[in-house]
Length: 225
Ligand code: DC
Image (cartoon, rainbow, N blue to C red; front, side):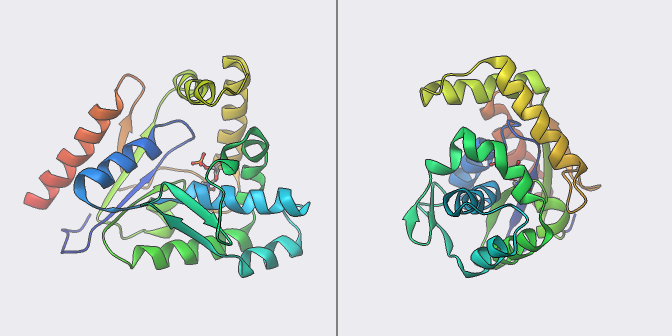
């Protein structure tokens, strides 16, 4: 990885529930970076497909994606789809079930990646998802791949869902995460994988703060080198 100049790009990839969103958000706050939640963009497009009753691989959906406006506000906490705040709607089980099928369509990925790269030019950024270290920002100054066991990731997701009063079980969440892992890792375009130069972090037995501190320490160490 190259030495950083004044503009910094930190890219993080990893499977669902590996802690990337929470970690990236906290690192963004601590280091004063722009936070890019790339999964939220695929979720917003999935919501568009559900609302308009469009199949993931339909030409209509691709056209709708090309024409739609996806914007972040409040440093990544709020996502606006055609100016409507859809931050809550994109986290529903219906979107969870369909998002991997939408995210595997190359034309949709192409549009979203262009958008992400534009956001990346706006300033120092921490971006997380499945292909940020490999496709979106292959020249990122810092690359991390976060992982954890499926059971641990399912437990984390279940705790989040409980807070939102979603009635489900650990077994159901584990099955949903495993199915999504399989789709994300085996799809033909931009599958989830660790970049060769990414630092791999197993978060199974680590707290969020431990991972945040580790990432900040790595960034500081490499900056000082
Ligand atoms: O990180 P998340 O769970 O919000 O991501 C939702 C889905 O979007 C996930 O199943 C895979 C897809 N995704 C992707 O294909 N590429 C990204 N960079 C981010 C997410």
